[in-house]
Image (cartoon, rainbow, N blue to C red; front, top):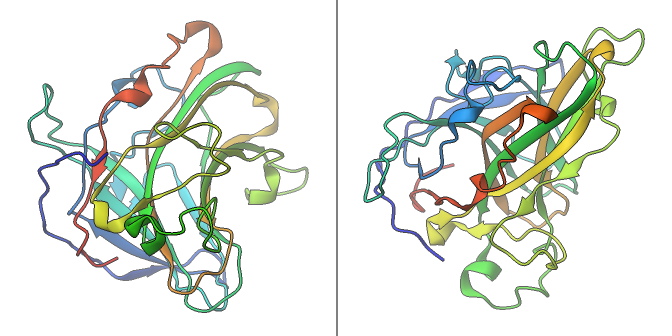
Length: 282
């Protein structure tokens, strides 16, 4: 399962508080110990995708352009992290990827009760007509899961199966509202694991010690109402309160295309993995 990756084992942490509302704070960090074998050109702005900065390659002051993170302070949970994740990969693959960034979201339980989530949203200003659209969203997730690392009690230990979860959803600004809110999303769609059985009851993240993991993703046609200020939302976190358990979620390569223009990107999910340094600080 583990894929050998050539990693730059340099971790750069920029600990800056990014305030999102009066009761919220996110630490802005960057991960340079990571590398990814995926990079989908169709997700780039100007390449046919209708979502701004869906490939997360453009950043300003530690935040991805066009995206707004939302974090709610919660007792017993460490302040969430928003990470600029350097996924550039130079290795023994047919195609090298010299520049590729992703958006990382990090959550850790330090004694609080679950669930706990972090969100990010992107206003779909390029979707000007209501209709059906093809969307793809990709992510990788790994964390401190000793039960998974040592393969003991994988399906029995509390909160292992389905604890760390990632979703996307389309939200529409509610009447009278001036700011987007997670409650705007009527249906959160969970990202499915591409390389696990579809019959596994929940997503199993990779263990930090493995240093490599395939992605979770979702590919489908959705309806977007362009007349109600649509937003593309991401949601990630932990459902349960296993003490000191942490998860890194790295989102990348999100695209939206008019459904009749889509090439059905169903093969985008089979290429490579994301790797990291298991000893890097998070």
